[in-house]
Amino acid sequence: QKDGYDWFMRKEIFEQPKAVADALLGRRGLNGQLALDEMRLSDEDVRDIDKIIIIACGTSFYAGMVAKYAIEHWCRIPVEVELSSEFRYRDPILDNGTLVVAISQSGETADTLQAIRHARVQKSKVLAICNTNGSTIPRESDAVIYTHAGPEIGVASTKGFLTQLVACYLLGLYLAQVRGVKFDDEIARILDQLDGIPAAIESVLADAESVYALARDYVSTKSVLFLGRHAGYPVALEGALKLKELAYIHAEGFAAGELKHGPIALVEEGLPIFCVIPPRGRDQLHEKMISGIQEVRARGARTICLAEEDDELIKPYADTLITLPKVPVLLQPLVATVPLQLFACELATAMGHDVDMPRNLAKSVTVE
Ligand code: M6R
Image (cartoon, rainbow, N blue to C red; front, top):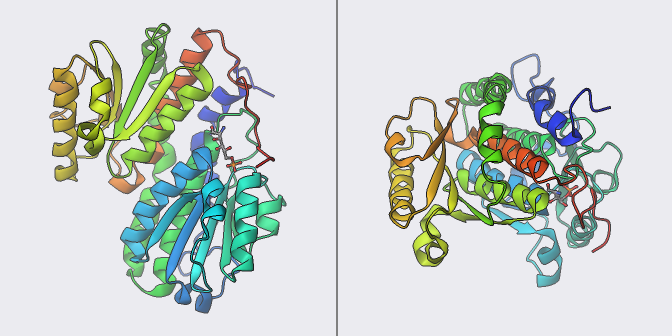
C-alpha cells in the first residue's frame, strides 16, 4: 500500500524517521550499555579483531564508506571498504582476526553472498548488516545486525540506507564498548545523539516542498555533480547514484579535495553542483569545502549547498541553500542524504519516469 503517496519510494523516504527509530529500538540494556541481541559474536571474538573489511554493492557500499569513518575514529581498528564484486577476485588477505562485514538490504545480492562464502572459507568471521529476516546472507553469516527498516519496495534504496548507517554506528559503538576503547558515558552520549536523529529527519522532511520546487527547475539538465568531504563524500556518491538510477542523467559524486586532480575540467557555465557542507564544528573541513566551492563558482557552476541551519559563512557561496539540522559530522549522512533522495524522486517524477521501477534495474541483484 502506498498510503496516498504516488510512489513507494516517496512513502519510504517519509517513513525514515520511524525506520531510524525502529533501528535504534531496544539496543540499550538495563545498565544503559549497548546490547546487540542478534550479534552472536563473543566478547573474545570481538577483542581478537585486528582488521575489518566491509563488503557491499551500490548504496550499501556507501553505507560502508560512512562506517569506515565512524569505526576507525571510535575504535581505532583499521577498516577497509570494498565492492563485493571486486573483493573475491583479488585474493584478499584474510585470517581469523579479520571481521568481514557484509552490508545488504535484501540479503540476497549475489556478489555479496559469494564474497562472504569466500571469506568464511578463509576462516574469517562474517557479520551481516541486513534488512531482510531469514534471507541468505544473514543465514550464512556468523552474526547479524538487522536494520528493522520494514519492507523496502522502491528499487532505489532510501530507508534501507539510513538504517544501514544506524546499524554501522551501533556496530562501531559496540566494538568500542567491548574493547574498552571508549568510556561508557561517551558511548551513551553518542547514542543520545542518535536518538535525536528521527526528529532531525522530520525537520528536513518538513521542507520537502522547497526541494521539490528546486527539482522541477532541473528537468532539462543533462549533468549534475555532487561534492562532499569526510562523511559527506559517501553522501555525495549516494546523491549521484539516486539521480542516475531514477532520472537517467549523468551524475557524479566526488571528494571535494579531488576536484583539482581532474573533475574540475567538467565544470562549465550553469552546471548544477550539490555541495554537502560539513558542520561548522569541523572548521578545517568547512574551510576546505568553501575553497572548493569558490573554484567551481569561478568557472560558472551553480551551487546547491546543504549546510547546517546556522551556517552563516556558507551563504555567499550558495546559489541555493538547503538547511540541515545540527548534528555531529559523523552522523550528518543521516540528515544530509534526505534532501538528495527527495530531489531525485521529484525530478524523475517531473521527467515522467517510473520512480519505483527504473529501467534496467531490479530490487535485488541475484546474478553475479
Ligand atoms: O540488497 P543490497 O543492499 O545488497 O543491494 C545492493 C545494491 O544493489 C543496491 O543498493 C542498489 O544500488 C540500489 N538500487 C540503490 O538505490
